[in-house]
Length: 90
Image (cartoon, rainbow, N blue to C red):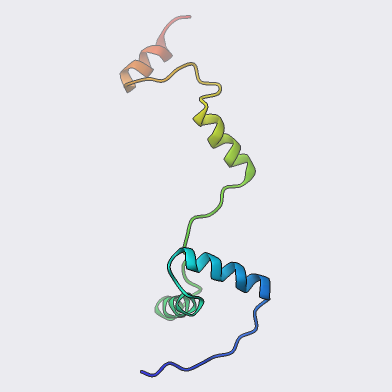
């Protein structure tokens, strides 16, 4: 089937951001739009999201805190060791 051209109006900043995102997935803007349209037709709905959601600031801080083990007494090598620590009389 021979592709046809379609003109759409897009905010120039949004277009640049979308192109950069899709290029990071190895896709052109045209390929990404075709993926979207095919999936929409297949599902008969607004389809899927490609990529990972960006965590908000609170989540990023919690992740960093966990990585630094803030508020944690120590690590455990097994569930049994954790349970022993939890059940210990202090």
